[in-house]
Length: 185
Image (cartoon, rainbow, N blue to C red; front, side, top):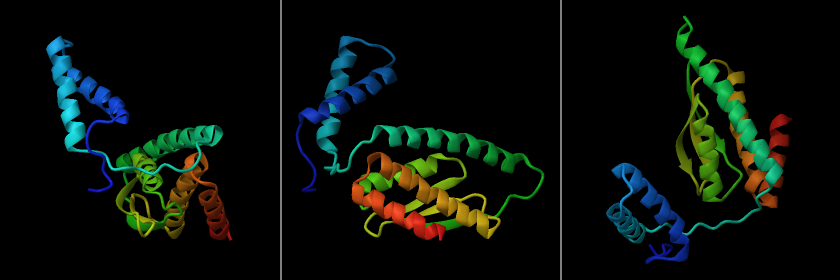
């Protein structure tokens, strides 16, 4: 609990504003009593359930971020059609598998974002994330052949690589590029 911040701070204001907006949407009416009630409830929530401190290191790179988001949207569209086809085709469902993926990043934030980006694409689901061991376990839907398993593993590593290029440190990017070269050979 030592790494948590107690009391209200300036950086809590966006969270309080967001929670108040949710409060107003839940009540369905913007009245002075609802606004004051939302602000009070939001402030209590922020003080009772403080956020842990998150170390943010790395650099936000605009072009790699655009590449990350556009590739994510493309993967989302392709995977949606693939999973839909697997669901409606007349054949039996393909075998699935649980894969262990070793991660490059030691940052819990970047590990979590990698897991989220992978899980949001249909056909894969994050089962567990071991931040200290730098690994995660994914359930993949279509693991009918060793090539498909290797492809799922490569997609996960490429997703982490794109994320690191967008917001990672230079050392993480270099490690990720080295690992991708080793995987290719």
